[in-house]
Image (cartoon, rainbow, N blue to C red; front, side, top):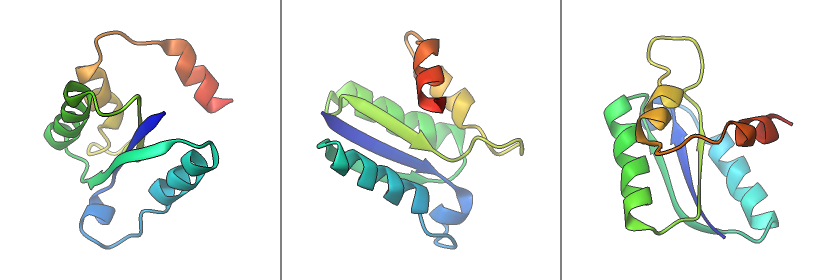
Length: 100
């Protein structure tokens, strides 16, 4: 399986914080035998998030896109909204499986 990892973090994008959650996902994916097709870190910006997600999906270079970060309650935490903006169809049960 080809996996892309998108970390969303203003501080990370400015180089002020290490991308430890992205590192953890790389480690997890590697242990599962998944190939890391791409990995990016962008600030909490809807246009940037949508752009990366759309480019990966349209290029058909990945089987799974994992995002981390940008899910808090501050006005700049827009990952859920940006992700929903690019979905053709939502699969809510996958959200439950991720939380389990």
